[in-house]
Amino acid sequence: MKALTNRAKAVDRRPMNFWEKIYLVAIFKGLMITIKHFFMKKQTINYPEEKRPFSPVFRGLHILNRDEEGRENCTACGLCALACPAEAITMEAAERLPGEEHLYREEKYAAKYEINMLRCIFCGFCEEACPKDAVYLSQTVPPPSFDRKNFVYGKQDLLIPHPKNK
Ligand code: SF4
Ligand code: SF4
Image (cartoon, protein in one colour):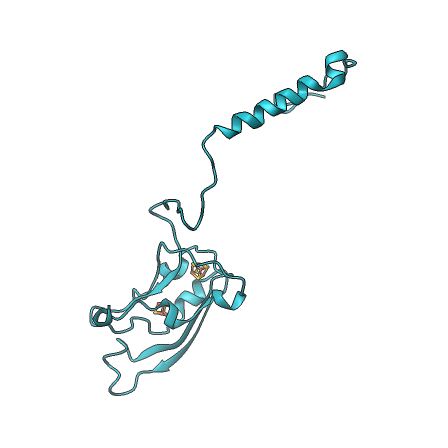
């Protein structure tokens, strides 16, 4: 049968000679490969003490943005949740009350906003869908945890600090 590629290797079926039978040459060759790897540049790093530099287009943890006066940008329109292919975003909308104009930019705001980072695939669709400049993906990696609950980020975890409290 004609081979589709030239990558196929013919199997050598000749009987083994004396040196091949005692396997010493093969063992020595294997050891040389191991020794060679001792002196090669290590592919691993001592995380978290050492960190790899990320690409400029890396997408990590989300942040919820405020305007220059410190008011929350998000109006709980739900477009980010709708755009999310992993269904990782949930929110509850609330209406701004008189006297809360300094807290929320629009008449409606997200009383609850949650992102499940275990579902998120960091595609950035939520950021692209947002018409209010409210959600961004930062360059921060979610810290490791043994508890699944710690990967559900609430509004208090996502909101950037108020400019006056920085
Ligand atoms: S980055 Fe993608 S997967 Fe993650 S919350 Fe946004 S839209 Fe969903
Ligand atoms: S983050 Fe943006 S898209 Fe998502 S609910 Fe808030 S305003 Fe709408």
